[in-house]
Length: 455
Image (cartoon, rainbow, N blue to C red; front, side, top):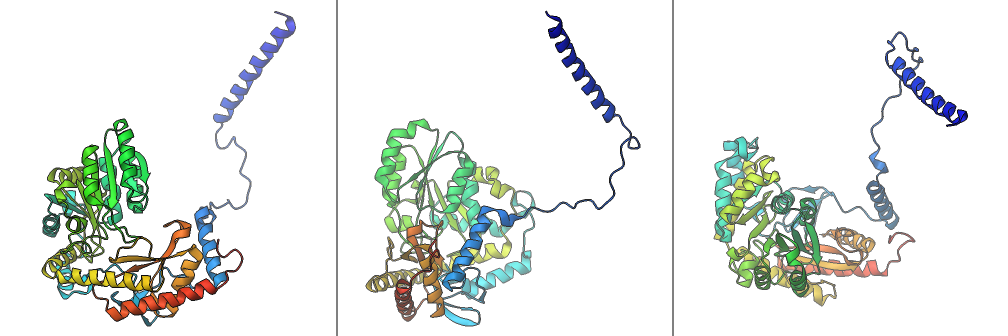
């Protein structure tokens, strides 16, 4: 070793030792040894500005576009009182086609009385998770009634329809599994599939040939397979081929889950949904899901199926175990709505007749109703989101409340107005709504968009 090399190595080692000694000396200093802090006010920490998020910037952009187009923002308009075939907004009565009070049960005297009685007896909240102290007899009565209505062994109700899908899928599926969903499936199912960690496959809308082919080639790669569809698609008003889905899932050893949020009370002779309409044994479907906020004029969600499935979910679905039980007046209102539905099936017949009339009149007026089949849901497809918002605004000015559905809820070129029907709409109200929409659409199409507004 040369002298210069040895000296260099020693120098580096020595410097390292001195730096370490200096670090330790500084760490042993008492507060009096340390230099005094400079006088002056301490800087106050500021909360994060959420206005800097890209999503918030998009909201500002949309509001700016609305101002550029000279239209009011159609969302969050306050309604005064009951939302039936008409409603009051900003002190004015308008035709209402934006509420899913499908059978008019939200205004039924028996439903109101049941909710009031439940408040008097149980209070407004059950004040705990059902697992610990929130169980009430109303829960069991409602679940027994829903299970009987569906023809299944048991049922569990939860406080949120969206969370019902998420927590059920999350409890049942995992990283070694696959979830196959229709491309038009609801966000709650998409989110549940994402959070489960399972592989996610989206198949083209109602394309069961595609689904069959995929499972034929790939089913062996996964432990469990879950197919999820809607009984009535909430954006387009059409439905799947349930008999074929049952055959397909059986042949490929898959589970089938049907979201009946918009189908129960709407499809089938007595409102029992797509199984009744298409003549399918409900026990051949593993998981029936529905919401209480539509036909049942309440709030929350439910799962109907085998006794083993419900027992499993009550012990393992986080959205049930760790969430407060369904409020007593909500459970009572849903139970009363179920009883009225069964006692007055003519409401279902009226709704179905109204659905056929709305679709016929809309097509005759040249409106693009997409895949709608004449149920409680019908879109009027416009194209881009800006024109959908403009159409909704024109309709509102003319006395019709029908809200726009825009990107990203639907593809940009599929932006639309969405009509919700009830059994209580009169024929004249349906005809007038179509007339207003057709006249408003003609104005929108004739109007030239300001540069940039379409974006």
